[in-house]
Length: 201
Image (cartoon, rainbow, N blue to C red; front, side, top):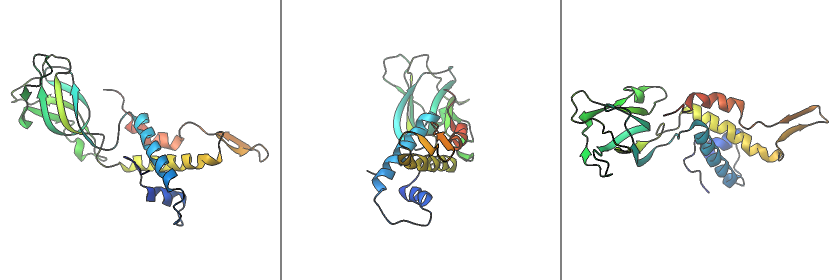
């Protein structure tokens, strides 16, 4: 298999595991699987994804002037349904709304937009209809993996790959005076990822 929407590459993971260099490809399939699994683990832990997907999503307004949205990178079209028939008759122009936070794309790392507000001179307001807003665009926390997320992925990948040497989740030995149970998630990984966890919409 190949890594799907992974937060590290096979080459990066192999370099972390074997920094002096290795040409043997015997673990490539396993490492691909580990990197994909850990990337999805990060998605689940943070409640968001760190790659871009083009899709159409639907929302209900918060007020006539504000709609909270999930991680939004760019808008292709924004449409609203005024009468609840799920036909989105009104197509908004880019001048009808603003994306917030305004400077999200310039932050380090770049952040997604999480609110859409009506522009002062816009034509429309958000209708008081459930699922009244249709947005087609690019979604995700970022189009490229933030360095902190990449590092967390590499750390957890190495840990999961080495898990094969501790099949019962225990490392060390009683005879050597050291015995420890592997925790669910590496503490350093949690430290890196906690600032990216989604609190709620």
